[in-house]
Length: 230
Image (cartoon, rainbow, N blue to C red; front, side, top):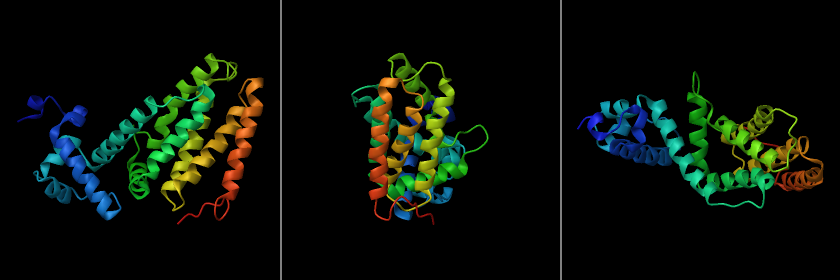
């Protein structure tokens, strides 16, 4: 059966049965080895397909890695869709902590995944953690509309700062061995400070309180706030 008969091509490989088989095999190999080296010959043998099949479906090792990330992101989006924050402001923190809980399920796997996607990002591709930019822009826009944030500053600039905080902390976590919980506290601490600078007056003290709470959690972390980097 050809890709056309499948109803798929590289652009729609997530719906290809071969893609699902390859992704399952790739996940198993990563969990066994702890890295995303993924030799194509090993992957093809594990999935019981021809050597050319991974290239036909994903184009490259990079394509497989990013498809793995997208499948994980879709699972997380479903979790977020089913969660209700008390308001738009709290959503910035809830989404972050939900994400950290998601990664905490299997930290070695997600560390390896983020390291691999960082290594392979480039050209027209965005570093995975920075794909949050449009999501944060939308969250900022909604928070402005509902009266939590000021409307006299550029939405994209605010979203860029939040994305920088998120991406930098995930990058540090992926290259280190500290618990994802600490990364979440650091991101939320940074968000508290950044959002306090653009918040409506009635929300500023609430964000300062959040900053103090996250600051204390970071300081109480075993070994203090320092991040051990290998």
